[in-house]
Length: 113
Image (cartoon, rainbow, N blue to C red; front, side, top):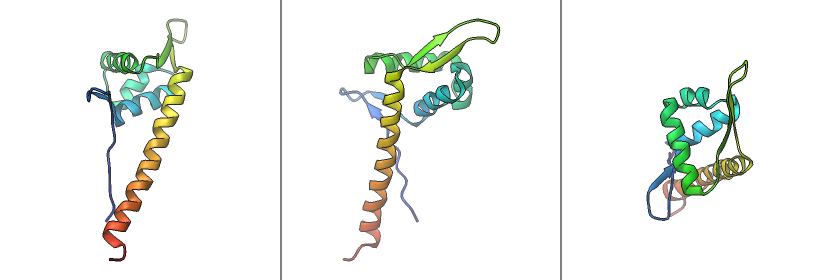
């Protein structure tokens, strides 16, 4: 038996901001260099991916993706420096949270009484 937890971010007003699927989208942009490919990989339509990115950008107050269109090989997309740092911190938060959840689980279920 082991614990599982799912974390997401909300605005200060309690509105959903982003969670695992948006995280996968941003990680895929970082890996593929393409919002189109990232959307496909994360299970979004291209239009939904752009909509999600714009909504998160508006809430955070900075751009997440820089896109360059056209050319022989097509366009490209990459995370902004601010987005890459935000992504790094969010991933660190998730790792540390999972560790904390595991410690609490261990103490509650298997700790000395």
